[in-house]
Image (cartoon, rainbow, N blue to C red; front, side, top):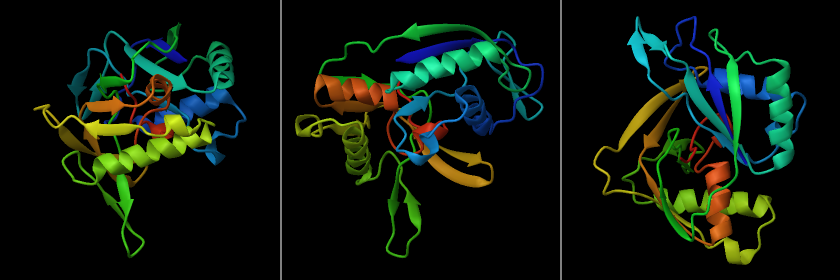
Length: 222
């Protein structure tokens, strides 16, 4: 299930690295929950809409759109109730309206745009982690393995685990973006992806997002 939120215009300048505020609002609305202790079976976009760059920050003079997707529908209901109780987001923005979207039919192959950058990392031998770019040889394999872990966490059987996620390297405007989340610098990818697998697995990916830290604003699919 996906919730599309329409937000009022901001009354304060929004910094470029605002994503942690979205995470904070999400958990405020959910209240006490166990999501921090689980693999993230949810994802959310960045703010979207007509945006201006002003004085080193962002301004949405007509308001913004934001979507949040949960595989487990109990969190969707909890989120809606939290928003109704306290619609404040951040920077003077409030939730003006909520629209539900059920999972569309995609079939067993689909090309998705990304609604937030995709973070993919691999472990080095020295214990550090390497950020992978959309052009790296290993990145598709690691994205696919990450999705297999999420499918297992959600209880999907073996027939659904044969899922492949590939960056669309024919897309000419792909780029990487350096994002600062409360002092942690992360390099993520803005590039469409090609998914193939069972219809159920592709729907699942649309809900939960791809790559790492989908619960912190990365890897949402549009």
